Structure formats: C-alpha cells, structure tokens
Length: 285
Ligand SMILES: [Zn+2]
Image (tube, rainbow, N blue to C red):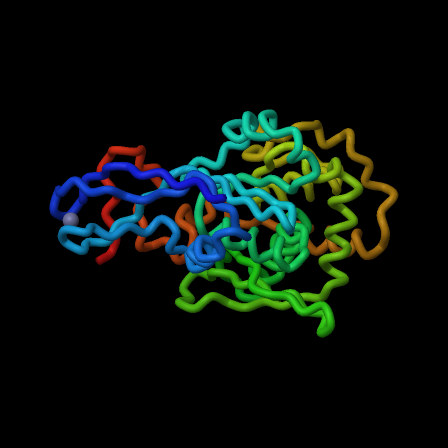
C-alpha cells in the first residue's frame, strides 16, 4: 500500500486554502499510476481547485519497488543519507534491498529506469562520468548533467543524454556493455555489497570512487564526504580494460560547478521543500 496524507496548503496564486494529497510512501507495484507520475516527473505537481493555478509541492517520499528490491528516499533539495538512516534501522528486513536517496524527481526517475532495467546505478554513474569526459574533449564545451536513457544488451548499447553548454537539445551518447561491466568491476572491487545503508549515488559519488580506484587523494569537494582515505585502496591489480577506462578520465578537469538545477526542472522553484501547511511553491501555469 502507498501511504497517502492530506495537508492543507495555501495557493500561491489566489491564496485560497486547499487540501493537497501527498504520498509519504509509494508502493510501485500496488500503485502503478504513482510510478508513472514519478517517471513523467509530475509526482509533486499540484493544481489549485479554486483558481486552477499549478504549483510544485515537494516533500519527502519513500518510493519502494518490492519485486525489484529497491527503495528510493526522495528528499527534495537535500538528499542527505543521514536522514534516511533511521528508515534502514527501523526495517531490518530491508537488508539486501538497494537503497538510495535522491534530491529531485529527475534523479529519482533515472534510478527507477536503471533499476528496472537491471542495472547498477553506481556503475552507471562511473560510465556517465567517463562519457562526460569524452564529450567535453570532443565538443570543447562545458558538459552539464547527464542522464541514463535506455539500454539494449542484445545490441550492446547503453545510452545517456547530456546537457551541453549552448545546446538546447540534450546530446545523446551511446556506449557498450563492456564499458558498463568494467565500471561494475571497479564497483565490486572497491565498494561493500549493496543493500545495507541508504546511499547518495551521484556524480560526486562517481568522482570519489574513481579517485579511490586510481589511488588518488579525493578531490576537495569530495574529501569531506569520503568515508575512507584513498590511500587504502589498491590500484595495482586491475585489468587492462579498467585501466583504460580510468585513463580515459585522466587529466579530466570537469567543471566544478555543475548547473545547480537539473534539466526539466526549470519550471520548478529551487528545490525547496514545502512543509505541510506552508504555501505551495508557485509553478508554471
Ligand atoms: Zn488558487
């Protein structure tokens, strides 16, 4: 069962008090309609029953797919794994279930697509980082956030889209499953088995992992979150494929400041969480 809560909100357009339906928990199998609303990123959309104005009402929500054994704690604007630690402790039966925290619907959607396609998002983030490097070199432009699109193992293709400086349409970039499997092998060498704690698996996660793999000091922005010193990680006994994968990232000087807003969220306010009872965020009508 999904958990529905009703809260009173103030319409940002007409000021009317109205009731908003929210889901603090989504069971993707029982409520496929809610799954679709996550996938089309309309999950937090709210419409005022008085004046019809649309707004985005973002709040924490736990998305659970029991069959595929994954769980995503959506914490809009503040994906802090610490906040989810209590959930993991409360339900020991969730051990072995893949657990993530995300800060937006866009990244939640990406996780859902990856997990439903049977892929490991930790490896996918590594692949994405390497593809972004290649793209940055090829285009000579700043490459912004990238997102997993689709994969076809029979055709040996995994596709990602990247938002590139000065380009309106995202740039599609394909790679092979062998690139993904190399990344997967780095993941299994360096990381504990998945399914214990909630993880924030994003670009910085991939950067820290790559730095550990290469035996480097974590980058300054990553240092504060790094769990272990990079020096503990052996970098010697890796296959040639992984070495070349890592070398591809050699010399990468990617932009430190990725655009703060994720694509497709330009219509949303800067990821503030509207606490129950507070004024709904004004969205595009
Ligand atoms: Zn209204």
